[in-house]
Image (tube, rainbow, N blue to C red; front, side, top):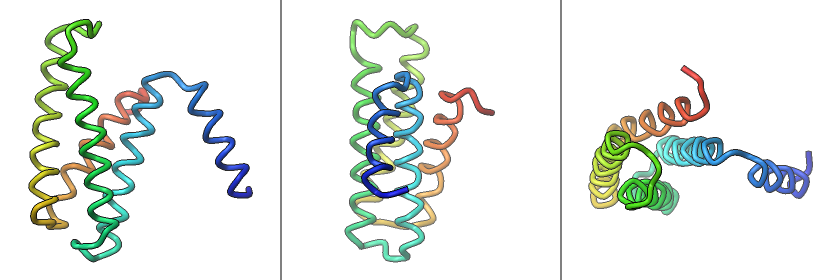
Length: 122
């Protein structure tokens, strides 16, 4: 498939996907970016920084949504999302200051596990 065809398919898939599917796909994208950074084998590379920044932006959105007063989720769910968000954000900030690839694994696993839950996969 050509690159332009793949891009067009991705745009259509995103506009027709449910919010849960979009969140799951974005979490997987973040996990893949982090994994690619590890595979690059240079903790100080621009790729590593960009992967961590993408993850930080994503989890900042999740935290903001969990704290929003008119969020329709039950309070206990919102609190759990906020707690995970704070953990991920603190770990991501620490890795931005001192990238250590062995500390990327928990972030990758969190992103993948939550994506699987959003997608209805075990």
